[in-house]
Image (cartoon, rainbow over the protein chains, first blue to last red):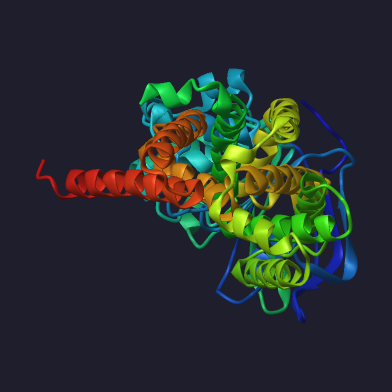
Length: 204
Length: 267
């Protein structure tokens, strides 16, 4: 699916909460791209995702999203309640996951867990299911913050496979400290520094 | 014992109570998922205060209670008042108003006492119609609110990121809960209605294998608890509200013990 319009364009964006934390940042993301963002703590990577997801303050510059583009924005940790009497399948349905996608997208390790309550899954299983739920919704732009947190090597490998599926349908922006993971899944890699973002690896 | 259930004198209260005993736990499960179960106690107090204020002004208690609770529910949505502090203030305001209005009006004290104790046996056709109306509203709106509510709970950034009018379904759920608590408080008493919101949902959250069964299980628990309390209160000549709360707490204790023994049992 070729789409010449960028899904997302940041122009000299300065964002933060009570004060600016990151910027000025300029970048653009097109459909089919997986853009990775890494760098030391405190450089405002998560704040940048929140600004794109309309949860942080924009001090100057602008964010242009493709009109009608649907966003999925996942934080570092999935929501955990004291009791969650919701099955994996119900979680996927709540996210708006398309059933035809589920057949192909779910890794073999997760499929048998769909009938179990999500509070009876391990942290890694739940995290992977949570990310799958967002990817299976058909969102045009997916923002993932530290998606490999809690994942063991098998689940991490499953996530790499999932991100490669239906890649042309969406654009993905991933913040992570897991450099090896970003190298494997991203088409472009940016490094956050105090001065802003620098290209760490060009288009692949 | 079953004679009491089929006594024509108690048909109307029994039916009204059964309806609410099936419905309030479903609203309770939704409130618990949103972590807003304490709001139900606040709304029950506001319904109670509204009923008394209505009566003091010559308005039927049912209308006063409904307006009191709906007003609280709407205010809660528009002020984005969430969390224990906000609900604590609702409880205090409702409690204070209930007792002050009760102490200063002719029939108020009697009604205030009835609301605290639970006056199920006096439930009439107005309460039954209100309950049926509430049931119809729930059947119409809950299936549509369920998916956005679950999504907002587990994917909290989705609505903000996509600029969805989240207040609409928050308001919808708040008003349904408020309506349920208003009718419930007038029919089953303040604490009886609150117990039906809290306890069956608490039990179902522990035992149910899925969200669907949580709703079904909470509703069934409410109905079973209600029937047991109805018969016990009549047989033992006890006030209904405290009996209902006692029976539900007993069921919760049983489930808690079962859960503890299951967790400590060696594999």
